[in-house]
Length: 203
Image 1 (tube, rainbow, N blue to C red):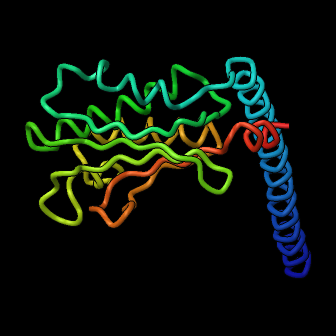
Image 2 (cartoon, rainbow, N blue to C red):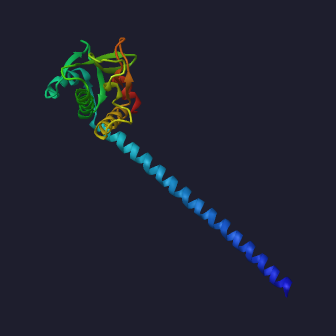
Image 3 (cartoon, one colour):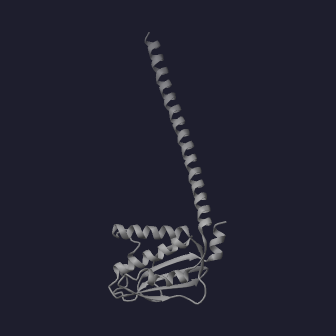
């Protein structure tokens, strides 16, 4: 009788162990299936976003977009020193988004710079990239508030604008970051691939 009960106990323990292992294998299989489905959905969303960006994008010359900043921010108490080359600075992108990025940086600069200070905005072509640089010409130190636009410690409204600018730059294959230029104070730099490089990266 004792041996029979012992055998039943062992059999029950083994059965429960096998059931637990089987349940684990099933849950792992279901998790893998879900993860695979999610990965496919994310890949499809990325493809759709890329196709949408292509359909909305066109050849843009950054020079008129930068030159219009003075008019778009005429209500701000700062002055502008616009430096753009004679040659075209062509990128492949969405005009409205590029305008939004440029204006958000200019408006942030107007909020943190001293009234009457001069914001220099320059554009150039460098190593296959279109480069835009913002600099406070009247900055009192080497790391003025303008250069801290992208820092996580910013107020909520400024931080939200910074994230939008980073997202737009990323969608266009570029990036925006704090950097000095021509020996001046720390400012902000935007780099975007020129027209040929941008078109090649979307194929």
